Amino acid sequence: MAHIDDPHTQKANLSFIKASMKAPLLSRDHEFELARRWQQSRDEKALHALVSSHTRLVVAVASRFRNYGLPLGDLVQEGNLGLMQAASRFEPEREVRFSTYAAWWIRSTIQEFVLRNWSIVRTGTTAGQKSLFFNLRRLRARIDNNPSATSLTAEGRRSVAEELDVSEHEVETMEIRLTATDQSLNHPLSEDGGEWQDFLADDGPSPEQIVIGLKDSRSRTAWLSEAMDTLSPRERTIIAARRLREDGATLEELGHTLGVSKERVRQLEHRAMGKLRQSIMRHVGRPEELFVEA
Image 1: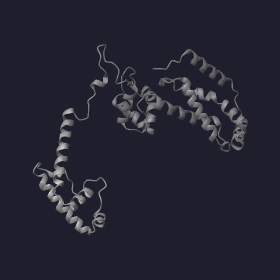
Image 2: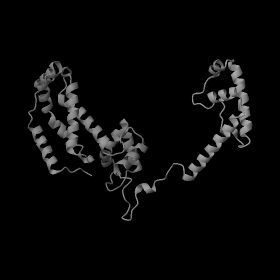
Image 3: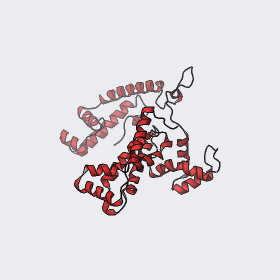
Image 4: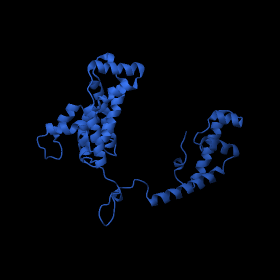
């Protein structure tokens, strides 16, 4: 749906457009002279004259994107940013007219603005998707002979995909995106109440699963604490350092701390793990659920 500006905004836009159309056109030599003065001397008056004479180009390009439902004034302002970027990068020695060079920058900045603001869902994240977004309607009108159809035929999607070098699935997905509208999850379904979000499935655990998980966690903690009491102080040190820390200590580090070889630490750890399994087996049949071998 097209955006409709308020009267004050419409008046401001019209004033800018009229001023743009009154700006004098530049000859090739004058244009290059202004560009060189800005490039070599940072002459702001030259930059202003160069940019002002091409604002009509911004208006012309921005007008082509009005059917995306965004304010014309915003499109023009984005185009002006592109025009300024073109002026800062323009190289007159390449003998290319500034309007030809600036048109690309103006169109690019406006397209990026449209993609960012057309929908709250990011659209056109790849070059192929961007091409689809800005060309699908035109190609559909040219390819499909049935204007009343709600979607392209299989043959039509294939033709679009071949012309834009994208997959048919991407064409179908973009077609759905362009025909759908954004809706708030808090939008009421009826006067009696209820919202769209009420019908979304909750992928999180149910209250029953949460309670069971908490109970199991407390049980495992108690079993582990009881099993740790069966170990000697040195064995508890090794298990705590090797198994109960996220960044477990190495055998060599523990050997240095305990004053024994790393092979002896490995033997003590193996013996301690055996004791823990025996203790926990009295409560659970699968102790491997609590311990993972390194």
